[in-house]
Image 1 (cartoon, rainbow, N blue to C red):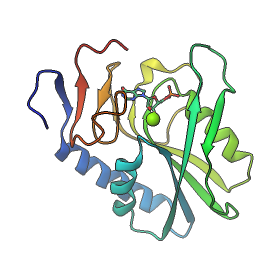
Image 2: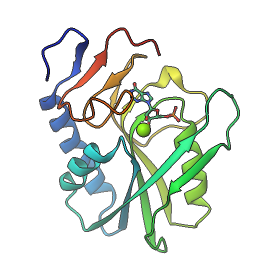
Image 3: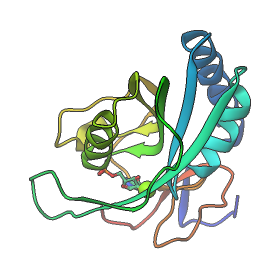
Image 4: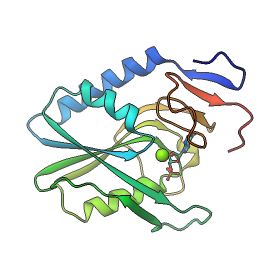
Length: 177
Ligand code: IMP
Ligand code: MG
């Protein structure tokens, strides 16, 4: 990690690695003998997804979705899909993989959209959870770390598309969320 006072270390690479391996083991046990499809929400989830999928000791498929949600309103229903999955969903158990669960709006909408396509199940695995920011009623079945209400970057998470390549998860100082 850059040794720079604009970052404050929150979760280091070793802690991330061991937690991702634990999650992979739990998911392996939960989905034995099931047809598992990991769906990553672009772009933030791709680093987590790439490690998580290799920590799961099952045959599985992966796909990606890209969505944008409109903020500034307390209402939901405002998600546009700019890239959809192309995988056949019949007989599949979908595990949505996301970098961070914040207000919850994005995953609330994506879950509804995917449930409407009749997979067997839809669950959520979020690397990070900021429960204090939630505005819709949603929770993830699998969570890497619960964090306070601070703006974090690294391990796939960005601020204005920067810092996704940092190996640690760090708080971006002076950023007002
Ligand atoms: P929400 O749960 O619909 O509010 O949206 C979650 C999305 O907001 C995540 O996928 C991130 O792209 C972004 N986000 C929320 N909090 C943070 C953060 O602390 N750092 C970087 N991105 C964040
Ligand atoms: Mg994101």
